[in-house]
Length: 375
Image (cartoon, rainbow, N blue to C red; front, side, top):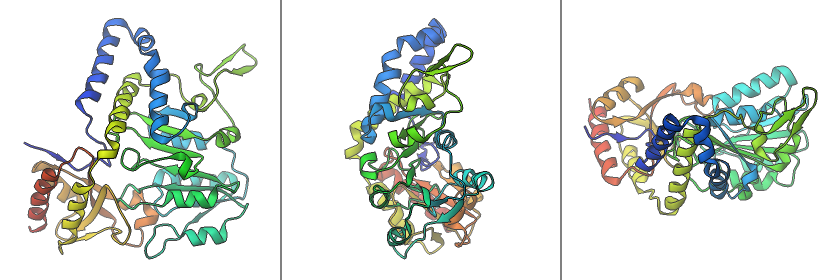
């Protein structure tokens, strides 16, 4: 069966080069030993990988850290930040549920107030509201660049321009935009940006990237530093590395990082050439079908288009599509509760178009989608 993969927002398909890099590393581990293989790959793991991620984000290599997932990066880094009691935190309506859970715990422990940045008729962020209400009481602003439920693009650069002269920390969850949209941390003016290796970068599962600004790093309180970054005489700890690497764990999946390096290199080579036409075709044709309702279609979107079919449950629709060779995903509003709570879309079908999806594959997918909708 010729499978069309429209679930890149879950996990992209790794290239043969990325798969080969992982398999080659693992084969050498099995032959030589894991520690010895790590030494053999020292330059790639400790220099090239950081340069590749930094180049993609227009950052310094010392400001890059690697984690097992974007969520681990986001929560472990912000977990080291002392939130002043009673301060305000602003979030976007696109916020991922795990991020909101983190802030809900802070409500209990630090008495912070979480406020949602309003939307307008045409924008998922009301920038004029931000301009009017920003003051020193706003400690941190957190925005998901793209929500996991659909392709809505939050204007993170414009928001950063409003925040850059303030003391407010600015956090961007780029899980669905890393590998899909250009990301320049200097243009965004963010203090933390996190992303997953497995999604639109088409890297391996178990890899995540974080950019940490020097300003944020200086405000973190280390409650642990692993042995790649610190030492102790039994009584006193000594930090021996600078930059974001101090936030990492020493033991990690090095095979995943080797694969991530290949995926980063591949994306950097093709980023400027990636066509948006397959996604545009899919979104355009789905808009023409009266038997479904598109989510958040009033906003500019990219990469992900989600809909509620009128004839089947999302789970049944996705299951039948998979049997016909089309990979979709059954999404739940619980993962982006602020954005979808008023739409009545508790469950929906998500289609996400990675850079390897061709126009012909989208046309093939549309044949399947029309057949399922017409049942």
